[in-house]
Image (tube, rainbow, N blue to C red; front, side, top):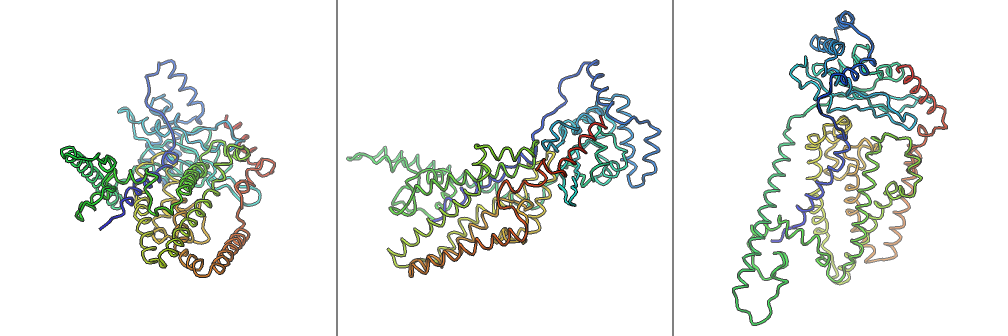
Length: 536
């Protein structure tokens, strides 16, 4: 019995890649309690921080919050303690205030990510002298335009609040002006508050535990399989050294892994164990001469297909993380640079990968049909589904159940919202239907946006046998069928783009609110500058 040894090994590689955006979602931030500041330096910093906050007193704090029955008593008390600690220049309160986002430079460039320093906020109240514990929250504001459209959640502002306050209570405190914040608090007078999201540490769920157990079991099998094959290789070498050969020993067979050795009768469990070996799979993946199609293999196309995959990885990294740019409006300038063309136009690499995959499948299938006169179409489907689904499912469920434990930074909210689509529509991913459901959908709000690629790859593979058979029996009919399908695809894309007013190019995606000649965009920037001047 022969097992597909590369399935599990490919799965581990693919799974490691789906976490590539974790660092962007978490955010790169630094901050700690640091070295001890001198008293005169601390006093200067205190004056700078408290000068930003609207003057308050215990009487104002009590009068303002006592009548707000929407806020719990514990939250009200902690907010009052926060204000009193600021007046008394307590270090933990100053660090909380210092960790909040402020008006930055580069507003005209689209610098709307005022996330502050989450680490400083969380660690500020670890001091036993602190009156309460703090937590980091990210607030979002919409930017409306004159044409009744808006940039949803365009402004992100990080704030540090007492841990006892819930997200709804923080929202009420911000709207009422009862929360000590830097001058950004007046931003609510111009733009509507869209959300308040507080970071949290999630406990392990049942799905996460199952995925972890499967991962540990897989890793255990990989270690066992690799160890067994290494032991078998050493024993074979030792045996051959003890034998007296009259001819020159075949070192190539001695040094090759178990997959290359011939005439060895292995039991089923040994073959199963060796299918998890990193030695065999690594040797097979890295060996360009080890192919499945013999003399009919076009290895150069495999190389081109590998290059297109890396091209896609590069482009996806830029496009997915574009929303976290500090100079978002400069993206139109970046697109005009010659060095940006490869990363921003990676969509052509996706088309190239599909083209090369279809070419290779058609070539090998037609070769087999001409030489053998038949093709096992049942095995054609089963082999592809098994080989692709095993690593795909491992990557998908590993992502949706474990990624939250790797991302706890300022932008955790974006990940949480994306994962909700996975929980609701997970079945469409399992059935390779996620690129069509829900329709019409938005790929930017999909649970794992780049997984549409897997759905298309499987769908193309499913419809390929009828086309291949037509090319084999009636080549002219097959070519005509391909031409019709290409025309239908172009027509469908045109109709969908026109009906839903979708952009057809990368630069067209950023027209409108990125056009600084647009009065609406300039008006928004004027509001920002005026707000910054007033708050200062």
